[in-house]
Length: 114
Length: 225
Image 1 (cartoon, each protein chain N blue to C red):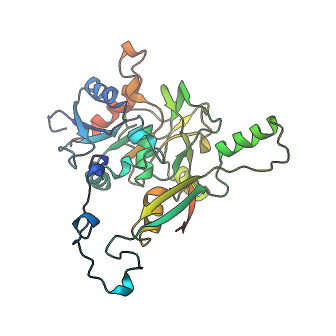
Image 2: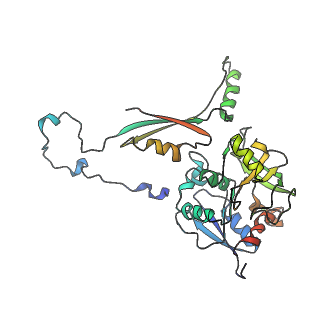
Image 3: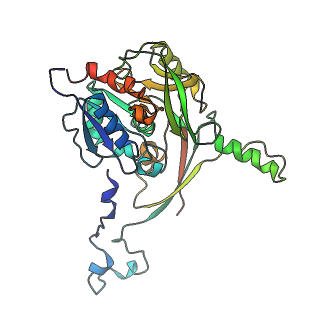
C-alpha cells in the first residue's frame, strides 16, 4: 500500500449522476433507500492498551487530575477511538487485527453505530 | 566477499529522517549505498538492508504501523526470511516489530519524555551480522533519540530471547524503561536485528565519534558472499 494512491476517486456504477432520469422502480420501492447506492455503515473501533501493559499516558493523567483538585481517581487508561464509514462490516475485524491495533500490546472492540 | 563492493540498501519512507545519515554511514563503511524508495517493490539486488530512523508516515496510528505495508516491505520481508541481513534502527526497529520480523513492540518511554542523549550499551552477542565485528561484553556509546523506545514483550517471549541469546544490545543505564534494559534484539534466524540507538549518527570523527562503524562494518564480513 502506498499513501500516494489514496487520491484516486472511484465512480460507482449506479452513482446518482449516472442514473437514468426517470425512476423505473416499482412503486413500493419509492420510499425505500436507493439500493443501487453503496450502503454506508458507521463503525466505531476502540483500541486500548492490553491489561497489564504499562500505560504512561494514563499514569500521567491520573497524576495530573488530583493536582487540579479532582480527588478519588483510582486509575486512568488512555486508548484510541477510530470512527470509519464503510460499505460492509465484513472486514472490520481483519482491519483491527492487521492495522488498527497491534495485538502484541493492544486490545480492540468495535461496533456498528449506524 | 567475492571481490565486489558490498551494496547496502537504505529504505526511504515519507518521514524517514536518518536515511541520509545511514547512506553516509554505508559510504564510511566502504560499501556502496543504495537508496530503496518505499513505493518500489525492488531491493535492487543489495547484500544487506538498513531500515533507518525517523517518523515514517508521521508515526500516525503507531510508529511503524503504516510503513510496514509500504511496497518495499514485500521484497524486504522475503529477503529477511531468506536470511538476508537487515538492521532496523529506531523507527526502523519499530517498523520491523510491526512487520513481525522481530518479536515484541516498542511502547512509549515510561517517563513520557522524548529522550535525546548518548548512552552506553553493552554488546550481548556477536552472533549476528551486525555485531560480528564487536566483542561480547564490549561497551560502546551511541546516540538515542526516541519517544517510543520502551521495548516490551510478554514474559514468555522475554525468557526465550534471553535463553537463546537474542538480546543484541543492552543499556548500561536504561533511558526509557525497556524490559530487561533491552536496547536491541534479533530474530530467530539472527539475521534481522533491531536496535534503538543510532550507529549511523556516529560514523565519522567529525560527528563526534565513529563508534557506530563497529556495528555497521560488522556486516561487511558476512554480506555479499
